[in-house]
Each structure stands twice: as structure tokens, then as C-alpha cells.
Image (tube, helix red, strand yellow):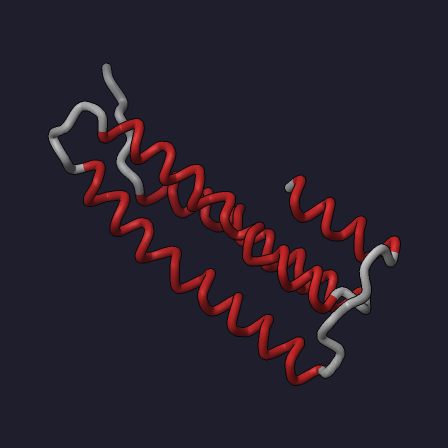
Length: 119
């Protein structure tokens, strides 16, 4: 959230100029980052489920760290899009959409990863 807010602030204040101006490049980059971010969700869930199935007692820590990185990495996809293309409110909103995939990733982890409920 901080990365996204900082990049939005930088672009709204006009501290750096947007590099990509042509709509073909802007929306091509958006579709590339969106596709990569969405396709990563089932792969990471599958990988973390396999890690969690390990009998190693340290695996819980590794899965938790991996899940944190996986959840917050959507902002890393949004950052270059906002900083390279942030000319208009439409492009900034598209960058926020990329960053909001963090919420989708968090929900997918809550739903599909095993939890250790002990009675």
C-alpha cells in the first residue's frame, strides 16, 4: 500500500514525467502485467499447498513468508505501470487496479491454503 501510495503521489505531483505516452504501449504494458499477476495466483497457491504438505516443522514459517511476499507482490507489478504511464486519472486507476490484486491474492490464500486449527 505504501509503494502504491508513494508512486501515486509522485505522479500526481508531477515529480517525474511519464515515459510511456502512446496508448498502445500503455495498455500493452497493463495487459502484460495484469496477465502475469493473475496467472501467478494459481501457481503460487499450488506451490504453497505443496510446501505446506511437507512434514518439516520449519515449513510453516517458509509458507507464511512466501504468502506475505505473494500477497504484497501485486504492488510491485503496479509500481512500474504507475511510474511509467501515470499521465491521466484512467492510467492511475488502472495502476490501482493492479495493486488491488493484493486483496485478491490475500483472499485466495485464506480460502485455498490449509490452516492449522487445533481443537
